[in-house]
Image 1 (cartoon, one colour):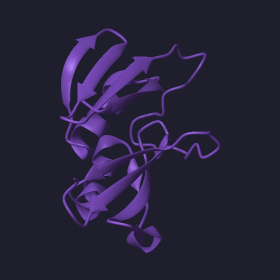
Image 2 (image 1 turned 120 degrees about the vertical axis):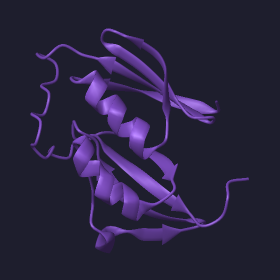
Image 3 (image 1 turned 60 degrees about the horizontal axis):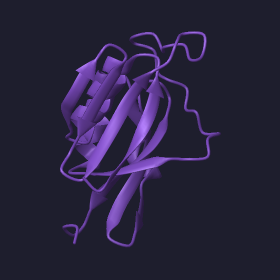
Image 4 (image 1 turned 135 degrees about the horizontal axis):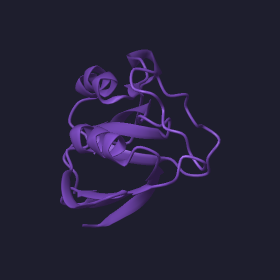
Length: 129
């Protein structure tokens, strides 16, 4: 593991499933109100918060993007197109291909997890070094 982040969530399991599937992470620790998921390079701690702090987004409702935060996570994924298809099944979304951009060694697009956290997914052109 090279790094990680903590994501505070109203629905810990739902948010964890989103990242597990799209970023290809696996559970490494599960307890009530807490899930730790990881890949070979990154660890995410999904930490529950009480409903008076953050209300869960109801199943089937598209989350409103929370774009007024100071931090945005980004992850390398195998395919933006595949993530765009899979994200709604997991409660989130990836913005349309028209909003993709390229930089350095990747093509990127913003997305929202099931609670509206804005995250950027990057499809790499070259394998990481």
